[in-house]
Length: 157
Image (cartoon, rainbow, N blue to C red; front, top):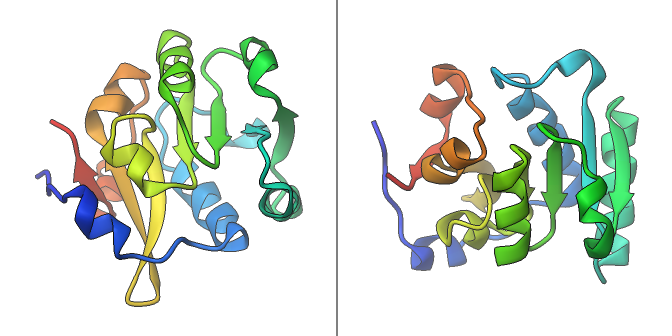
């Protein structure tokens, strides 16, 4: 069952703090049918959000997740079939992730609505919610358990 939501409805929600994102994304990734959770590695695309980046990287690291910071011009160094976290995605990131089966997680739920990322989080009534773009997920050739899909808001076809 797919539940559609509009860009306007997500804009009303507060962003989820980086520390909370790290905890939830770690749990979300355990539902992946493609990723090996024992050696989980997340690439974090570095931008100008230094404070958020440092908090997010530290939070992932504290949870035992290997984090590799990567700049846009070095994106081609990200391993195939891995995970890339972006604070905000764009067409180039989406195309690269799709071509290389890299799961794109975004800190901006609009990226999921605009088909630039597969998974994001947002706050609704002070509770974090998961949003998944099923089309992007399929394009990036990643599958998740139906248990996760039942918890998430699904957009895309």
